[in-house]
Image (tube, helix red, strand yellow):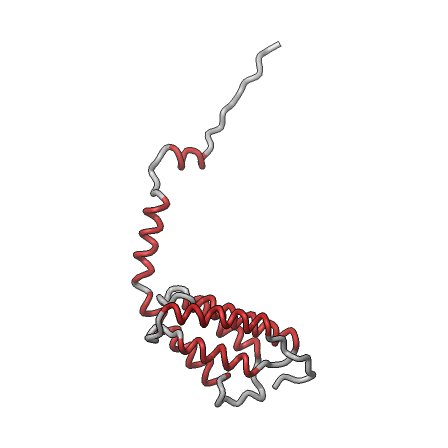
Length: 160
């Protein structure tokens, strides 16, 4: 009877981690932060553009009769993407609160226009060029989150 042969397969993950040659996590994070600094201005401009579009099409002066909540939802999702790198702390969370509100509106089949107006106004106060102190911005974020939790649109047959 022969002896069994034992093979040791080299694990690539272990080799990468323990044999070196890669970056430390702290160095990779520092590099990624440095790369993001260059896109802050572009993202801030995109935030302004999206907020302007949202206000024109869904704000207080807009023709809301035929407004589609799914289009507004997509615009706010785009706003979440760019606001994360715009340099405004709390803006992505405020946009997420807006998305929560829009999801409730879509599920209920109706709009909650007063809550939509509050979210639009709050996001305009939080734009990258706004001079509002950070503590006030973070209070706005917590207020929007509580508004989204409390407001439940009434079920109606038509939006508007």
